[in-house]
Length: 460
Image 1 (cartoon, helix red, strand yellow):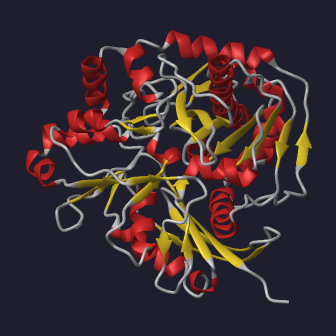
Image 2 (tube, helix red, strand yellow):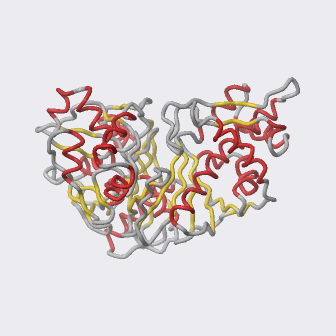
Image 3 (tube, one colour):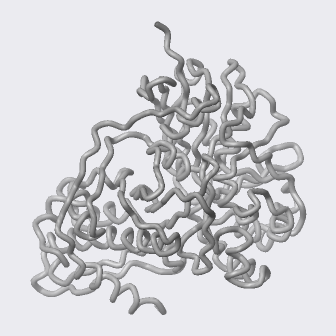
């Protein structure tokens, strides 16, 4: 019996992944991947090359396709739909002052959160538009259309090059979309850049927005965090905790969230609901840092960390290595304290893992407080979740059991689920089998030690 196949694409900061998936069962049939250039600004045409490489021999087998892409990135096109400048990515913090300026112009934190669902931070697209306006006026004047990374790839896949689309999930991270009204706010977009520009159509979650040249239906796609939630099939009360380039705590909610503190972004999701989210800039790179500083690989770093004790014998790492978003400290650096002549490699390794997990615990706590919804289950995913020390220590620091689903590309799987939804008109009920539950005795003293350092460095 022939299978119906769909393709899910994850265009992340670091690479493109393509999954070819059975539309009926969710079974992954094949996959491909290709790296992206490094840096916080990248020529978006490099993503097209990566998609061609990762999708070779796969995409043409799909009856439908969808893209999950890194959020917030600014892809600016001119009147000929050519790229104006390299895309400024979510982790480019040069627009920190622009965020401050825009919030002030909008009437302050509360007004900003009410208008967009989130307090503007440097990752948000509108702040990048303002930076271009202020620092590259010639480029700003050329901008006729602004897309997000996933929008750019969806447009590339579409045989109809006159149609530009996005979805409400990714649109909600631009700083000029109202999650309350579920619509663009063109006035905010114009204020950010200094002149009006064309915004893509916001397609419904189950819409078909076009066809590829080989005849596959194209779903709207969405942001990577929304796609991951869809891939995990999150229910209300579930929290996904992703440890990738960034650390992301996300929770599905039936109602919009507006947090004027800026600690929680009130995004929409890819199903018609909402996805309040707290994001840290420093996640898996904290483990990379620890391994590099100790001259060991990741497996040895984890083993060393498990040799030490809770609290790492007083050693604490505040892991704001390259600035931080939650809390909003764009100019921060990392801080390591409590070192003595008896400090061991194991203590340093433990401090790195505990610092990462404490930062993520802060993100979960902010999410719970902002939504008023308890975290019933925590799903640990992402590259950093492969660490044995992260898995073993997470329940103790987070204070609850942690579910580690089988290792999969959940952003790409979520995009494939959306593609199947657009193809059949019904959201598929794919099941995730093989999850493992980790438990541990809570160690609240570790969080207390960490939070003292966090609070004491607030003015640094």
